[in-house]
Image (cartoon, rainbow, N blue to C red; front, side, top):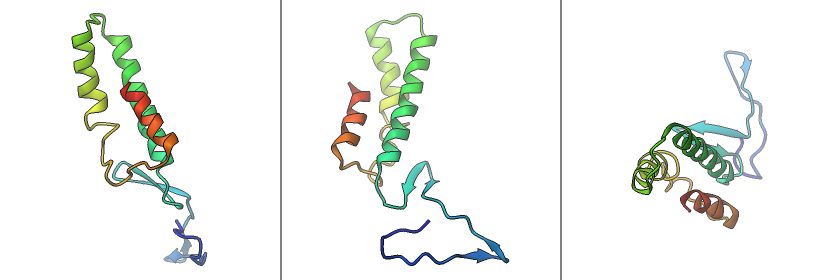
Length: 105
């Protein structure tokens, strides 16, 4: 991955095998793009949280608000998907913030 606009695009190799150039890389659960924007990480966290919320909706038959809120806080909002390592990919674009706030609403 080449980071920065003025970074020369050299071709690198290890043991005479050329290394693949990528635009996005996932490391420790965080999507890092070559332009260092966190939009892909926000989309990834949003999609993951939506999948978990759908799973809760499908599998839980006793949908009392207190139970649903407890499951939501445990499985979606608190750490696992939305807040995981947010200090590293802190969203600063309005569209990314609105996407993550949509989950919490």
